[in-house]
Length: 354
Ligand SMILES: [Fe+2]
Image 1 (cartoon, rainbow, N blue to C red):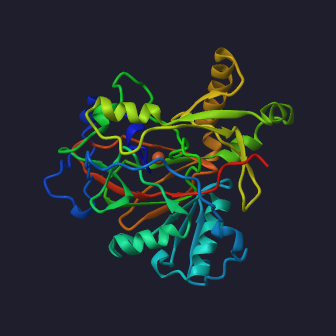
Image 2 (cartoon, rainbow, N blue to C red):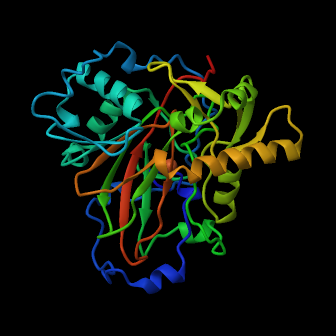
């Protein structure tokens, strides 16, 4: 998973291994062993309860004076999404600055913060910052951190590579577009992802704007989508974990969400379907549902002119709004290289179309 879904990440194939891009087979320990993926088969979570979420971006100053100071450097990657930011530390932002971060993430969809000290400020402070954006989701199947179930750990190394267990190796295209944990009643909103160890090249994350994907559709087609709802399922993720002998901390659920959702702060409408978790359209017969979902998934994945590629550097923290984007890992790096990253996933509002 890239930023996330460890269970729907691209497969690692011998073809890629044979490329020997850099031949830097790991021979050391993780730089941050504290965050090594932890799986306790006795750890169980109760069903998630709905809570009242108020988006911090709603009370932010639209000019963002605490985030975009004269020392802040900003560089856009695409007109539709993606902005690189340097000259500001997330860890030093005031409450107002964090509110502005929520707003800016909603507007730009993906923010790539460079040269951050975030990975070194400790788990309690990391969680404290992320909690401002919503209750943090505790993942049912991924590695977490002992004593800190809020962390979702992404780890691939020679000694621990679950990807090989869960992804069929007969696929040509190894991307898997998804929005994190969209099966939740309150799916992810402003999401944090930071890398602890990374390959010398590869392991980027692809992002697509679901707002622009929606905007490209014709008025007539948008009318047909109005009022439709789709089922998002966590069952396959849980079953995949059980199949490989892994854990399921919380029993899976299926949830209906509107096929088009409106962002509560920007008011923008976005497609809210993703190949990772969306299974069918409510009220459609099977072939109808498959036909429409296939069109939408193809439209999103082929939309290179509303996609970006987030490239990591040591110290990078990527913050994205899962409500208005989909993303995919790229499993293109040498399997001998370690990639170790952590996600914090605040849950936002119950999706609504209006
Ligand atoms: Fe993800």
